[in-house]
Image (cartoon, rainbow, N blue to C red; front, side, top):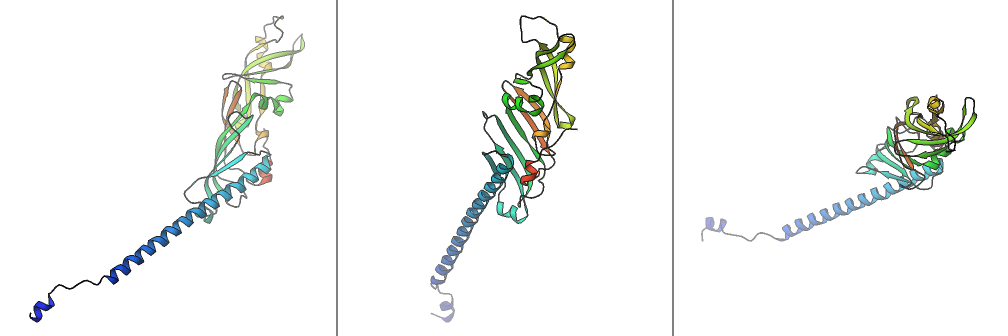
Length: 255
């Protein structure tokens, strides 16, 4: 065989180097997988700690013992590195509880100090809770929630007759730039069915305004009101929610 033929002859490819490269690649992939798993675990643990701390702060400020906090987004660690959580949901209570709420809060500072970004949500309450509101209880009224309307029973000063207990059915509407609810009477009657008296001329005297802002943190206003038998649901909005215990414990006011 000539030198040329010998040069072009088939030779075995060294396999040791190929095996070594493949093993190194597998090791690198394994390390990356482990790091990815650790990152996910760290993110999950951090998310849980943030949610627990926020829930504890809100429970302390509001007196509620069933507050839940859910932090959204793909990476809590990344959000913490940037100093704020993009989107957080606060909730408390279930459908049948006297009071329940759900709030979606944006741009929450990770140190839970200062003020958040925009807030939207709902607050749901039963008839007993509505009756206990200061604006209602101070008037000596008892509230019953119906299908789209509200009936409240209290004593009114009726010309000639003086103080008379009256059952008033009214429709609610948002007032005072979302800080209060106005109840416009649609009918009124005497609870004593043995008496017959047309109270239509006095409907305007039975109107009622209730300040809701006094039950909510400063800056939170109403956006909607929906009444169903036994329950009312209020839509809520705020440009920013105070996140300190003192801020959450403070209440707004009506003009």
